[in-house]
Image (cartoon, rainbow, N blue to C red; front, side, top):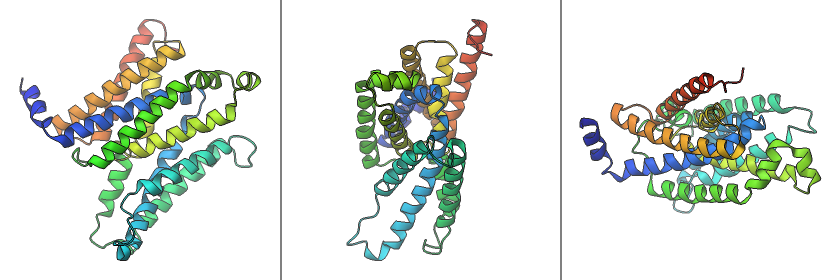
Length: 296
């Protein structure tokens, strides 16, 4: 009863409710595309883009610092204006490296992701930033999510809701096309489905999901939300539709439980959510092994 009383007390605050809303929406969106990425062996794109998003956030922060003298004329406080296009552009570039490129898939991801991390941290340590700025805290929050659950603003919540609705709508509308491209690109091309265009759509959606989740989970941990629920569902189920639905439900449950646990034990939100996802994966793996469904 003590636990429920504590949760009831914290849920009275709008900041906590906002964090729950954003966490559920981010987990739902990430899980929908996670199944496709795992089956297409595109998991590296999510991990690479998470590193790129950190570099993009550093560029946005640098732009805000340089524009400080002209604040009355230039509104550079909205980092999403810079972070979103840079991350989406990187998604397109990473996709293009898979074919007809001198630098192939995994090498390109390593080059872009590590380079983005290094440049991002370098930019954050330039003298243009105020000397009192907590650089280490900013870096930690960007990489691993906000250390406090009470950091999401109303505008961020509204932005997340709008983008999440668009992502879910696009997935549902193009479900059959995404299904076709996931399992057989050659057949999809032969039947008139432009596999390249839908691969690009998947990469762009993943980039958008990573951007909207950075404040809650962090750029390094978001790839876990994309991969773990899909892998967990695959331990028990076989069909694409069943795995997708199970992955979405499991991801939402783990995100909600992770946020509530972070409230009760004062732990970092992003890390707690990922820890719950890992525990769920272990449970599903054990159940799958018991039923003989575990693939060796």
